[in-house]
Image (cartoon, rainbow, N blue to C red; front, side, top):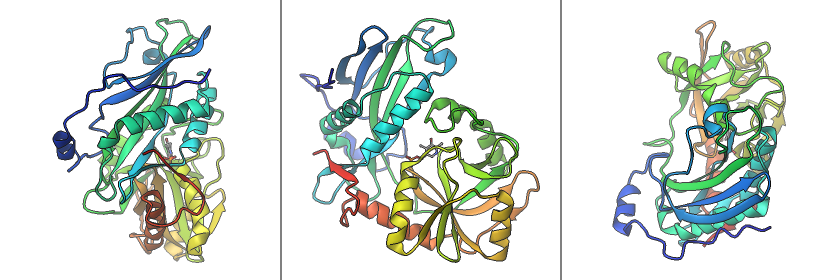
Length: 362
Ligand SMILES: *Cc1c(COP(=O)(O)O)cnc(C)c1O
């Protein structure tokens, strides 16, 4: 049965003046718009009770399964305001499909792509006034699915909630894009072979947080994880994919090896690279070769990418075993920034969309 996610009959909205005040400096993930989309799933009935309601508390008992066994998946995408006032999504079908893949891995029910898209479109259209107007600001959209059966037995839950919330977000980095310093963790792993690395799930984040604390303590702001078996090959950051640029114009990123999240930004950059004369390459990359390549001047830029921060130049890598710092020739990553600007120009409708990635909401 097709879900409708009909808007409430009498929605209430935060006054426009208050939204304008919030949107001066919304930060990231601090403010939420007026409504949320919800649907219930039960193993007998399937998806039911789809609705859009006021943003508020979820019905959950302390025995709710997600609180104990972390059966959960989520997505992250954005709605962008174009100069003419219209509001657009970027590749939302890719998020819908990835949520399905994540759900399969976490033994959660699969939400049909069209139902996902309906929920996002209707919710963003209803709360359209929350989509910021300033450059690099957007409405962040967070769909998620959680096990909500009140039962402590260990099996996949028979009651599940789909929910989607949104909120305005600013430029991820205040005061312009600054290169970030990265801690290369050769001690902790966030995912394991045969584990949940390709699923976008909260558990992967929980297992990355201690390494993140260690990174902070060492003056770094993010962690680059290496493979869990030998800690020899580069994988990705806690929530962003990793790329590097060679002096020959290759844009290199590790292949999706079962432990790397298939980022939509990653995929988009690989497809955009040729438009800027770069050659996209997916190949397994040893961390030792990254260090050697930086030292020899063969690797000239390091980049991290994801929906939240788009592309971030990596200014340095610090190895957790040797404590050695490696700085690429161009820490500001000018080519990476050119890719970033191209992607943003497409998302904000400032240039033609060569791949038909954007779709209009209102
Ligand atoms: C979400 C996420 C990314 C980035 O994916 P995008 O689709 O580009 O936002 C990368 N790595 C991890 C672990 C993630 O959860």
